[in-house]
Image (tube, rainbow, N blue to C red; front, side, top):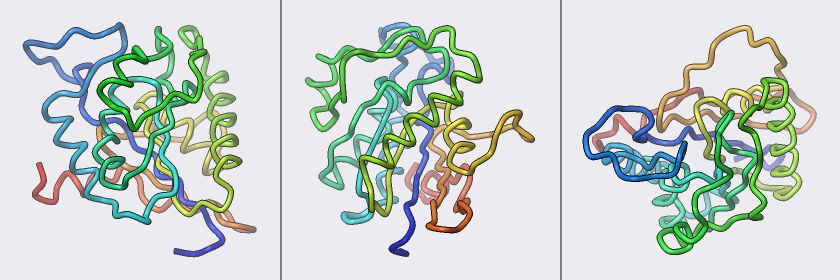
Length: 209
């Protein structure tokens, strides 16, 4: 990999009970849907994309479905997951999954802070500012990193990708980013950003599902 660029791999969480209607849905907090059995298998498939040394940092929102999505990869890579509220889904009504649940079931994940974020009434303009803030912070925290995984949600991922590519509102097209899909952008020194892939789901079609 080139030494003068940082790859941001944006991953939409895998299939959750909020994406499909299935019987026997487990109990959960409002807006905090866990992954379905299919989603859990998709998470294992995502882990197949990476080997130790491929990734410098992992970030996810403070909701259960993003943690479950990237947890198999974190175990494989022997890495921790930093949970930040700024990666939360657009207009989510709760600040985070119960921290005691995360500590008990997903010890590789940790909250950057427990203050949460009130975005229940967020506007698109607010989301643009939030995307700019969190990507600026992530890049500052990982100066010189070659690859960073960022696990987020279908409603917010477009704002992050647009920020990484230097695009602005209004969008000239509709993002179609599916569960478990990866969109990667390379930030290059003194060059324009490079879109490496968009909604890549090859890992879900490699005989792993």
